[in-house]
Image (cartoon, rainbow, N blue to C red; front, side, top):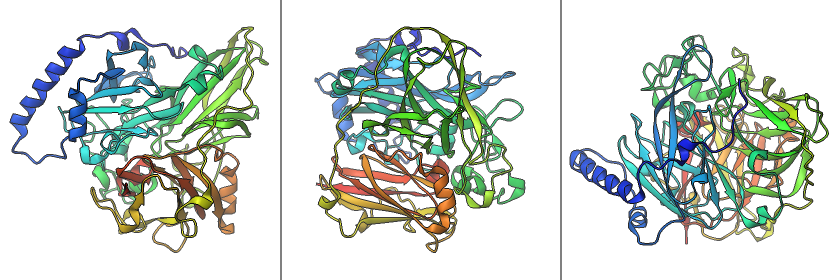
Length: 557
């Protein structure tokens, strides 16, 4: 296998139509769709703000299309694999804003700048409804990808927003209720990288020395097609998906989206590790410093990432962007949806040296090893990728002592400092829930009402005695529309063995949008919401999200 080419491809640079022609065609398409479908039940229409933004005379700095459609990809030898893929085209602005990962089914890397106004036309050419969530970006409610605004097959949605985030590694993926897991498994995901002036002044490795790495797991059948919930997925995806595996254990019980109940309970795990959509991934590097941007794009797998030779990892960024200062870890714990930026200096390695990035063994994140029929069960050790040092370069670069000035809040200033808002995580009535509540599209409980621009404390609680499977599994909890500080973690001593196997790798020093809550653990977070409206918080084990472990909260001005 050839090492991946990280440079932008010509395909992403070609503009087959100008902006005016595209918008004219889009308008006629939407009008025609309206005449055909006006008598059918419809999801919420794109809000007026989105439509007005698309027609305003104020031009964006960057305008592009993102199309989701079935495709094929060469992943394993022997046959093409049916996938779903995002493809993009720049209509106005810098063509380098789209960076295609050659040989990958993943969507293009979107490269945006802080302060930039961006307009994205999402085109759904899938056989089912979808919507895009810009994971980690702070955007208005109607731009965030809430499933209320789901886009039906053949329809379009216009995203128009200003990039307010600091420099960092973010990503985008589908977010239709009940269908997020299978759509991501089929290939719908992509990295989103934001730059800013503060980062540019640091002179961090860039260009060919800034490597985006999306880590995922997949399972294949003997025809090289993805297997999800015990059944093969074709180009039309979900045929037969309610036939479960696990020796028939709950296999006949259909859960979210026709997925077998065991998958919905435990999460979907693969038995092959892919990096940037490639198996047995290899990267070629020179004897100099690199920036590695790691995304755990897996549905449910947790990684305990380390170098095989025991070299410590130098972390410079997390979900919310650069850390204040670099931190050194023996390994990093990367839960689904979390990101980590690493500084890796190969200047001390001679050409010919190889390193393995591996995931080390860990325990305590699922009940009793029930999934150990999979050789890559949760917590199993395995190799992730190989790095070849294959050339000499004399360039030297120094790791900055100080990286950024993240916004820091004072817990004492929280409006609920004496009584943090609690979210208890457990299963009830065969659904994953938060505080015993399942997902309802527009529902907001009284304790899910929060105040704009007011610091507040939240606690996620994963303790026994609060419902079925209350303490059997780890839950990576994601909150939309905010970055938060991890204030503290408290673990029940009965769960310390599993907790200890991952705790040193938790990157709690920076801002996060997703936090791993271990069995027996209580995690306290500090945050401040800056966008009003209706947003989501949920478990980012995607099968749990699809099985109702998701709720709304409302930010009130």
